[in-house]
Image (cartoon, rainbow, N blue to C red; front, side):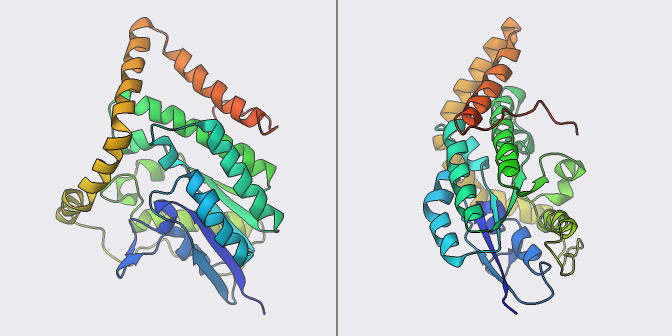
Length: 284
């Protein structure tokens, strides 16, 4: 029997950050791979921390295509929203190219929409709202493209797991082991429902105790400070500009214009791909 080939593309979420295993990371995709089939599964994780949609298309996609996967997960976009160069039309075009290339080889696509990073970080409203609009735009594009290419799509942007701190690691942006297991369980259920996963479902029960508060503080004081510093040099000056614009509109009572502007940008990005405009806000 030929092994099922599963290739994962994306950023730190798919790399497994927050779910340590030895000297590296494990993560939801590795946990999911064990339940795809009762027989052998060839799993390759191409995801890299910090990757944006452009990195997936330029670096990860060529490697994925050489592997000719049966199943390919593409979960990316949060890092795009955290950059001053964010451009939803460029993100849409890149994702469309990646999805089309993998689906064109016959791979089943696995996609997800993701929570708003500003809310996850607990940023003040004026700083969080611009990031929320960006993430909603990315999610709208991912929804539309997932429909276009028949992807198995997970709505991971809302629900009790987002607000449950036990699901998240110390940095508040990456799931901990429990969160990665929750994602793997949900993805497996979707695949099994479509007849695409025939192995046992991943366990939702963690193998390891949750990090202590002291361990979390150590992470924030070491690796976490570097993570924040790298993003501050790129995003923070631009985010402060966006926050100032947010406060001006709030004072004038015209905040709705910013929402309409972001929605129009997502619609234009999809129109450029000859896709239907995104639907309105989805009910929780």
